[in-house]
Length: 348
Image 1 (cartoon, one colour):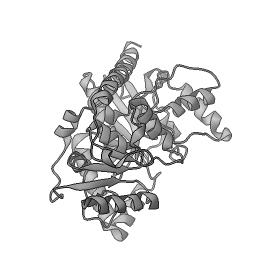
Image 2 (cartoon, rainbow, N blue to C red):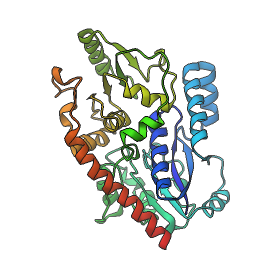
Image 3 (cartoon, rainbow, N blue to C red):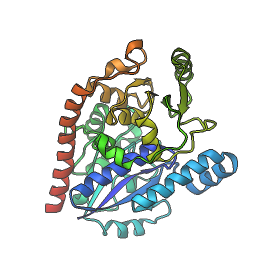
């Protein structure tokens, strides 16, 4: 079959690029041809934002540009911001199946393109979601009807966290079977990611790696304390002034693989630490995206890795024996959902 992945595109956010690549690879593993139909995450301002970053913030522009080149070399990406409804409908006819996900494709803040992100451009019988996320714990009542119409267009729904399953049932106003599956980045093994990785030049011999999507005073204070205690250099992957800021998603994996410990408040910071079997310290936010992280940690028995719970002697050690057993089972269940859903679409 010819399959389209529908997802958000964010060349700055490494987790976004990695989840898209991972889902593509697992679908290709089933013998299908795969394209990605993308909605730019900055909501239609792609060109203006990219130009602004080039003028005012060169490091970010360079990172986005390098990631764009890498993504285009490994995937067939089709950005649809300027597509008319007619052009989208024509595009939909080219595919036998449409897989919506992963990442925050149903986040109210990004849902400016419901015609794409709910798969309306394709026949209903072709549509499924894999590990779709809302990124929030509540949907405003005045948007329930929009979400209900969208979800009713997707016969095979899976989500990425427990709260998303609750939201689907709440919006549809009935109990439906909604599997909670792994983020695509966790479907690939450590060995898979090692093959994807590209050596990052001039990295320190030993370092603490931090990956926080938003500036957090609490995280920064903790890292300074950790640096003082250990004497290790800090590599900050989301600090524009850090000399290691300009990296591709392939170099991102290399930096994770070689870190002594990862300090993160990002969902994909957690996911990649786990996939690569690295010790990490979690800063779970109590705000909108915390459910994604807490669901993952709870399902894998890793709640003790939070900054509030972890002991000093555990910073640089993490036995993944039991985690990998749970992860292997979850991988099998998640991949089975993907495989069976695509098979059902093919048979229909």
